[in-house]
Length: 336
Image (cartoon, rainbow, N blue to C red; front, top):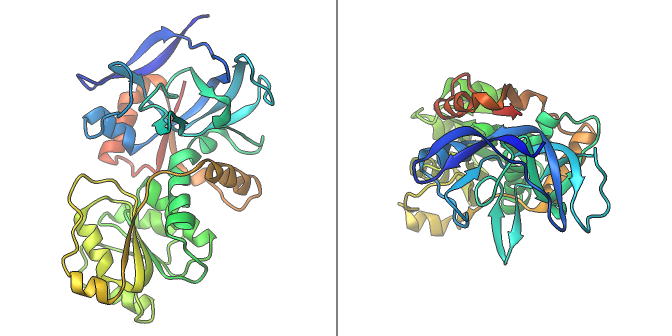
């Protein structure tokens, strides 16, 4: 069969539809993967609503989906070290011509029955890790993991804060606990998100609108403040609030994306306390492999991260639920 179903986004009209398209054929160095599970991310929602636009896409349409797991169907010419039937998860992007191209953004992704991937972007999966859980690792888990262990350089017993307990933020809470941060304080205006943060391991979950938030953070940290704060919301008020509760030499890591200006209102205080603001984006190849290994070894459990699994034809429902936060989803999965 040389045809397959795929969710295509037409960029000029931002129209999302399930279409029958040609089944891709792997070229040299590539493999064809039969998709078993594909995550629905807020970035996909932003592509559909026009907030985000691909930088390097050739053409006007793309198959969405950058969180993808499945089994190898066929190998392209020159591919060694892999066999048909192997379970794999795909990196969320690859380097092309010195630039990072994102799967499901700059080239066709995994909201489809099949996806082509460079063999260098495959990570083997153990039989014990369900495809639904594996699929979300490249981004929903690897992005906060890279932010925590890399950009944020969090060490054991350091006091940390997480602003925005959505899909990435909830995993950040789980991962911060795993690396030994204490206390882990989550901040979110939504009660359901705060409950989720506590479920994922936060020591304290605060309402960002609470006028006593600063006092509560200082109380939980013995008056010292936070050594690291992570903005997963991508909102200027979040950054101002986080900076106000940083300890001397504390760092604010910006993970959530925003097109709003970055400002520091109290720049003298910022300089006096030697605060730092660090930008963060995505993850590197080794982060996905690390997380797969940690999950295989029982150090991390992603079972509670999968809110629901939907067929490909219900993609509009999945996008709406992520956009409106209906049912407080951590991650929704499409299964072709």
